[in-house]
Image (cartoon, rainbow, N blue to C red; front, top):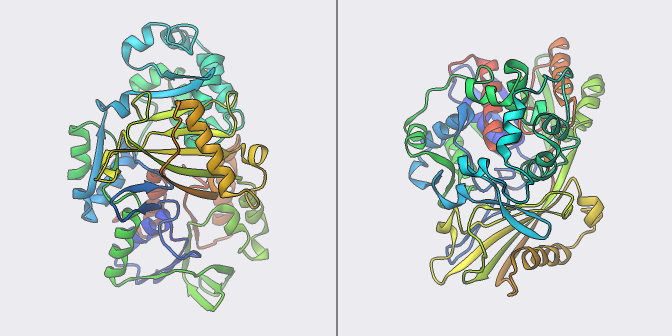
Length: 476
């Protein structure tokens, strides 16, 4: 293995390159990024007065093997001192809201929350949990999230809590999304233990073994729920790019859109606008649809499967208000699709990460997320919608849902086109078929990134690690 080309310089492509450059088997890694910056959806605005605003992921969970893996990388990059942790006792961890029937409701938490009836639910959630143990195991090899939760925990929970959660995490419709691919822990709990409750108590199957480094150990000791970075999440891919540059074994190319890839005698020829690159192996961190458009005609079956993975567009509107304007404190609120299909949720950024507020003068930072699976229906085509329209919708949501009558003193509209893949029912079969075709045709190609095995930052980084290990052995 001499030259590996990594297509896509988002966090997945950078992570794969990081693991590859630690192996003596790889002499050269070439990263090809079509845009003018690395980091993909990890994007922050740092204002000159010290305020920081996130236009993509704003916090990362440290839990599980994939969470520990990310923290080990952060440690290795020397970013430990930049971490802003939020522990489970923090008000942003304890208070999460849903907006139902034109009112904010705090989601039940802890034993007392399960024991009593908490609006908007019509009965104590403990009853749903107690009955769940008796529900028979499903017979299908996949199911929509809404159907799965309705069957096991009741329709009310599916309509309100799970509908909202899927909008917050996937910007997607829980009636179409796959439980097996989006929430494998729940699917495996039912398959292995016959119950979600027993699965949570006894474990729902093997997880990757991963030794926690000092930072990951600290996250366990201090009971972190999530973390960010002092200069915003964008400083993560920036540090990673710098590390790769200094390794001397990675070439980073911006504004290098791949036009076509064609099989060569050994490996691939990669056509760019201004030349051709040869590589022994390709790791594609491009979105599935983008990869399908550059594959050769000989890969028609693979292209078709890649085309089938849908993406949704999300409008992310950052707002800053003078003073304290929130009627409640917490992480934020989500909105079920029955209440307001266009607005997915509002994050109260100043609560979990006050360090990102400007140091002078008290302000409140919010982020309104809109569109997703409902974008076209509510806003029309992403190509024609205006920033003014999106800003007006976002400020109206803050006014009607949080009672904020003042106008924001600062705003930023980011239209994130095709940013979140949708794992519809049967997604796992598509991904299995893709990898089977790659193996059957002896293609020196690996698929990583959010299109396949999980949309979180942790999942995407771990997919880069997995691909590198499959290529060069588990020494990374």
